[in-house]
Each structure stands twice: as C-alpha cells, then as structure tokens.
Image (cartoon, rainbow, N blue to C red):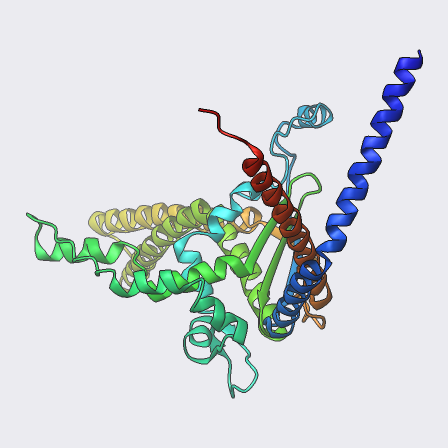
Length: 382
C-alpha cells in the first residue's frame, strides 16, 4: 500500500514538472508567439476590411398537393417507422428531390444568366451576364486571389488549345446542321459564369417539414433579391411545364381536331342552307334524296363538332387541375444587412490561428533542439 502511494506521488510530481517545463517553454518563446499572432491579426484585419460585401436574399415555398400523398395511410405508418415514401409534393409532377437537377441543368442556368438586375450606377436593368462581363469590378482581395491562388488556372486557360470542330461524316449537310442546332452548347465565358452562379444560388429542400428554400447572394442587395425572385419563378414554371406537358399535348390535339371539324361543319351547314334556299318546294325524288343526304352530313358533322367541343372544354379544365400550386411562405425581400464579411469573426479566427501556429513553432523548435542534443550525446563505438 505504501509503495502504491509512493508511485502516485512520483507520478504527480512528474506531471507538475512537465507542466512547469511547458510553461517555461511558452514563456521563453513568448516573443515568437506574440510576433506571429500580431502578423496573423494584421492579415485578418486586411481580409476583414477588403473582403467584398455580399447580400443574401431568400424565399421559402411549399408545393401544394391536390390529392392524397403516396402510400395514403401506409405513408403515415412508414413515416412513424422512419421510412420516407416521398410524400412531399406527390402531386406536383416531379419529386422535390429532383429540383436541384433542374437548377443545375444547362437550359435553366442559361435562362438565369439573362436575369435582369438593377445595378447601382446603371440607368436601366442589365442582365447577369452583362453585369459580370462589363460592369462588375472585384475587390482588392478578389484581385489578389485571382492573380495568386487563381494564377495557375489563368495560365492553363490561356495556353489551353481550343477543341477542333467535330464533323459528322457521311451525313448530308442539312441533317448535320439540324443535328448541331439541337445540341446544347456553352462557351468558356458562359461556363465561368455558370460556375459563379452555382456558388451564389442555394436550393435547400426540407423533406421532413415539406418546404423549399431558395437563396441568392450578390454584391448588391436589390440584385440579390431580383436573382432569388427570378430563380423561384423560373423553377416554378419548369415544374408546371413538366406537370402539364401531357395535358397540354392532348389539349393541342383536341384543338386541332376541333378546328378541322368546325370548318367542315360550317361548310356543310352552308351547303344545306343554300340548298334549302334554292329549293323551297321540293317535289322530285332526286331533290328529296339530296336534301336527306345533306341533312345526314349536317347531323353527323354537328354531332362530331359538339362532342369535340365538350372534350375541348373538359381538357381545358384538366390542364388547370394538373397545374401545381405553390404556396409562398416567405416572399423575397430586399436584405438590409450584409451577409458577409463578418469582420469581427474573421479577425478573431485569424488571431486564434496565429496564436496556435506561434505555440506550435515554439514547441517544434524545442522538440528539434532536444533531438539534436540527444543526437550529440550518442557515442558511436567501433
């Protein structure tokens, strides 16, 4: 028992000696720690001051359903068990989990590049492409990042050879031209703008609570709100078009048949009216037979025309029923507070980082010194 107490006391003394040695090492290297901390504090202050201002506008909406969710009561039981049967937006025509795929599609992004923005100093709204191509000027920190961290990318882009045009052998000129026109293409400038756009627009889907959030970040508050609003409206339009596509195609087919039968019915109606006007008292069998034939054609054309009119009205109602409805819980508003930079946080983080690096250098220097002293104390016996 006594031996155990002695071991514990010895361990405590060793721990105290280690802590005293660590404190002594830190005190001796205090100048290095303070110097490095001040350097990183200055860097943090520079970053905080010269970072570009950013404003974030957001909106929240819910895709309203018109019927029972997938699985009915089974879906409720599955939800209790932690299983998701995709109840959210079951009647919206497309699963909300696929909304990011729409947002990242080339046609959608090319339309977003044409979003009109109200920019300070411009007499009229300009597109997103025009803003970042002709008007936008990055901050000092942005220039430093571009020509330091981004310099390799600029060099690679400058020396990279342009891809040669692809030709379709054995294809007639007209068909080749049509095939090329059907393919989606983007330029290098559009690709750069799309990458920037992807970093500025965030789509968040909360499948549990059933809402969708869209946020957009730009250097100006009004333009950020306009980009968020346009993204929301464009996404809704894409979803509506997807949902009602089949119904619209059927409506178009019925409208075409309705127009044809309407023209045919009016022609037969006019023939029958002209025949009756010219033959007020029909006494011949041929005349009566002609009248019966015209009357039969008229009745048949009228029946088809009337039925198509009913189908047209029904299909128009069906298109309205198939059109999904979106409930906007939080409309887009112009932000009045900056989302970035958070200057105090930046300064604190850089200062803390400098302190950690300074302490690490002091202990590293001490460790290397002990290794060298141990290496000198080792004698090589022959």
